[in-house]
Length: 400
Image 1 (cartoon, one colour):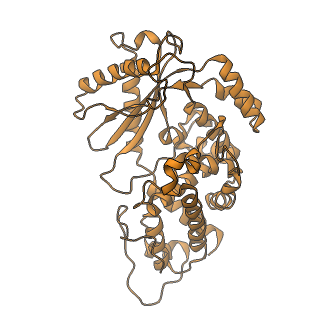
Image 2: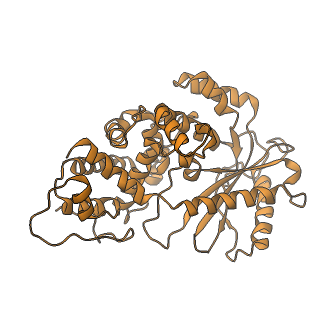
Image 3: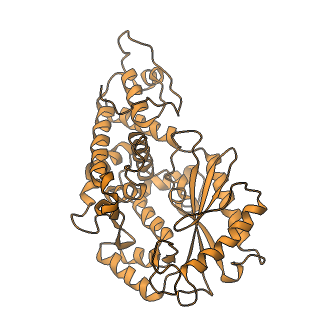
């Protein structure tokens, strides 16, 4: 198979697993609605200058369709109270309860039937409509200046550019976590979080393909790349992360506790990416190099915007020993490498369609591949099959 054929097939896989624009638009409306709600004078948080912002895969533009149509999208948002609250005046519990009061009032006002659900770090709203969402709101306050300076120094020491580090640390914050021993007491020791800063780091990796991003902006009639939301950049890095996450989801459909977490895949992919303009070249580079960015000692997979934090801290934690998390990550990576090579080498359209359906739950058409991509028609065997996006084999990883 030539490079152009591989390139188009990988691009088609990415297109079938991306979520519809309508889902992005609905998510944006809900983020904005929540931001407007928290800004109302009647809200408990209003006097503390609240800032509501998207985070996670919706912010990065790396969301993938759920494997099952009935599954909900997970939306994460931060609710930062930017003034009037500090670690010296409030406990984590008090901050979380304050935000929870306004989220509960919002739930009732919007007639959301399911109760507000408390998680370790956040409050969860459960929407039940034509596009199902979880909305997880993480309360936070700005990180103190001394800690921000330490974060900036750590980023630069680990290889980040000074300008990037300066921009990133502006968004560092302290979040609540009810698992911490000091959750109910006044303490300076809060968990650091910087989802907005992480998004800036990830965008800096996407910008390595700036000529392509500028082309995207031109096609969208935008004056510059920054005028487009990240999801519309459609950079090779974003598409590769989506493909890798979908491959992971299928492989671990029956072992959710063992699957590699998205932040590790996203971070290692971002570090391995070197600005390749074509999606197949980017995927090959990422699959080849991503494990080279795993440290032998702690932190194994450092958070690029807080290098002392280890995204892979559970790998060596005895509480998770039964899940063999590092072993399963490496098994997944080996399988992904093997499956990409199969896509590169397969010459039979029917076999390729079956392979892609089994490994990515992605529906391609064998007849279309033959016509458009120059495949030779397969020998007279069973006719090609058109799969639905949610149809997956009972045992997709069984070797043939």
